[in-house]
Image (cartoon, rainbow, N blue to C red; front, side):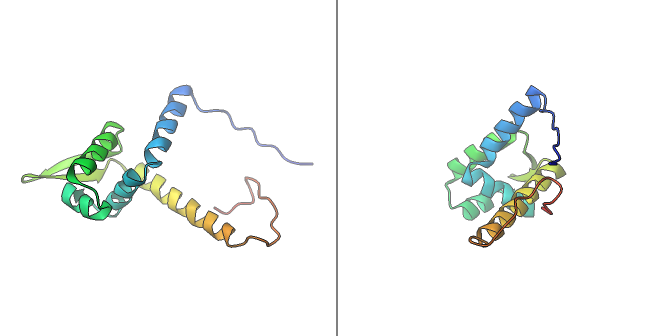
Length: 124
């Protein structure tokens, strides 16, 4: 007999925020900015070099990330330094990277016999 797991849906407010978060992470420039900030705090000039985007473009993306409470700022003289807002954002980015790597590994197994995994059988 197949075991079924019941997962209750998140409250609508949480669901809405999760959808917004997924949209934010779906933008390659914003994701690259967040991944860079996961490594260390950075100024706009650093993020321009990392993304290959203009100052105006990077600033626009940072404004969106700040509005979503994913990043915060501190001042260093005249420079504004951007940081991930909290540990949970870094954990989310780590989980995203781990999942992408696991899916890449599965893609490498094309043609091999695989049994579908359930919630208790996946190690990732």
